[in-house]
Length: 137
Image 1 (cartoon, rainbow, N blue to C red):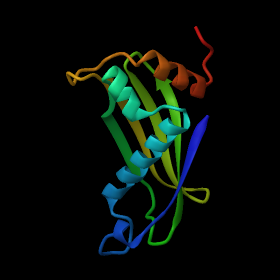
Image 2: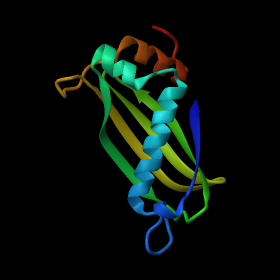
Image 3: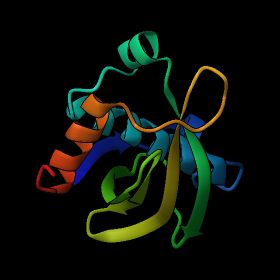
């Protein structure tokens, strides 16, 4: 299962050369991850208030394939690859039509109030397992 998030490249997203500034791809995929989590019915503010847990990027690997430019219509595809005790592994692709422009492999970790990894809360694990098509175990 994958989640699609549409966006348009604005002038402010580009650099002096007129192409999307490299750091803005990270913003695009962050927005897509937030919308993906929201689409699963997970309220991150409530999760923090009730369980004290938040997501943090633990590791990321990016590949800049082709440039996007002003006014391009893009789609960020987010896919859950693996779910672990305290973390999840995602694959994200920024597309212009069928053309991949940027890919990222992202490991998110769930951290508690003390800033240390904690197991994913049960409700979150259930929503993510359902999204991944796993059978309850």
